[in-house]
Image (cartoon, rainbow, N blue to C red; front, top):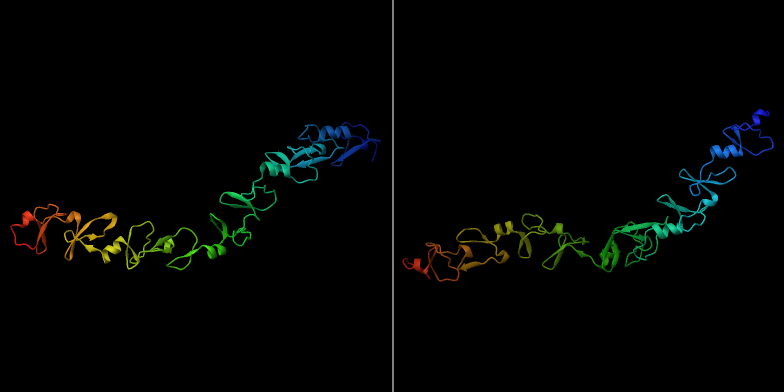
Length: 284
């Protein structure tokens, strides 16, 4: 290398006997290199000179002495750290300020540790355990009761009811009919097999029926209108001998006055008030 080749690429000053920096096969005196190529520290905004440690994180640079936790100011050099809103924090400060708290033990869930989410809350993996067997539930299905959380096998062993129809466990919801538990989807009309959950129903010999099927198969028919008499919602009806009437249909066959609570006369299939029936041959 000749004397001319041993000059600073930027200011052309001789570098013989001086410190220099080699960059991209070119030589630079220290002052030129610092002025042209140095990165600026995020913290102090001063250039990071060639004789200083340049610490880089996601395209940002710090002096070694400036690379500190934004909250407690402890050095982060060669230590684990986390970023929050472009601020660097040591793991302890990050945990206290940003990490979730365990729903069970109320302690911080440290960065890097496994965090479980259940019903909108966070848990340490070792805190979300079955109330019965005390084993961690992890990612397995969990069933919650007032007394705690349970894995499926323990819940079935301790609490579960079995559907009267399919004989399988009822894990949630369900209905009771004649003191027997049923899945909602298993509680069907014994006639047409449609679901009866949240439907009006009738019972016959301990079997459930929808209104249409019950009326078709079993309901008495009104002697006046021939429609079924269900007795639902407190509907009243009149019985006389082997015939039944809706209360609204129990009227005089001639003047149509209501006979509910009144004396009446009969002739064959007809019923009459006393006034209208007095002129005909009747049975009392």
